[in-house]
Amino acid sequence: MLPDDVRRLAEGLIADHLPGGGWTFAFDRAVRRAGACHHADRRITVSRHLAERAEEDEVRQVLLHEVAHALAGHRAGHGPRWRAACARVGHSGGRLHERPIAEDRARWVGTCPAGHEHRRFRRPERALSCGVCSRRFDRGALITWRRADPV
Image (cartoon, rainbow, N blue to C red; front, top):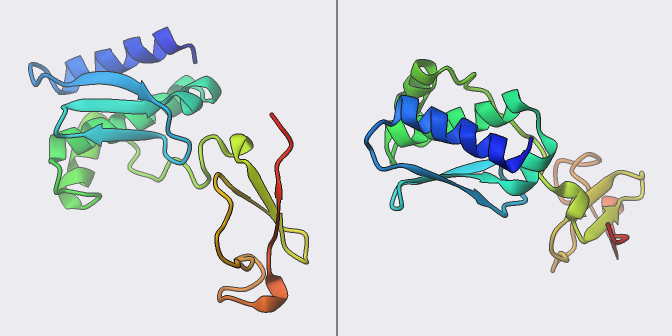
């Protein structure tokens, strides 16, 4: 989506569900999460990386997820109050992303002996083993790291 379209969508949802509450919208540079609800600042943010790659419905669901956080309060987490707020605003309630938003920008690529690829934004400081190959740390599934090719 184009940034102006995301901003219009966000401001419309905030006006519909959080009227007069002083809530605002902004983009952030998050690479691991899609959006955030900043209660102290009364601001909802969406990753600029997500906005560049996502369809309108996906961005809408991220925004509704964060609006529900704003309605439920900062201590609600993803508990019953938040789920009830999701139902009120029309959020699907499901997890939107399993992988980092801008994984293609990760600077480190790792491969285990079985060939599974792993990406990290920072160079791992300790040995890591492949979670696909073994649920526990396994020296036989150690990941070998290299710098990613420039994007």
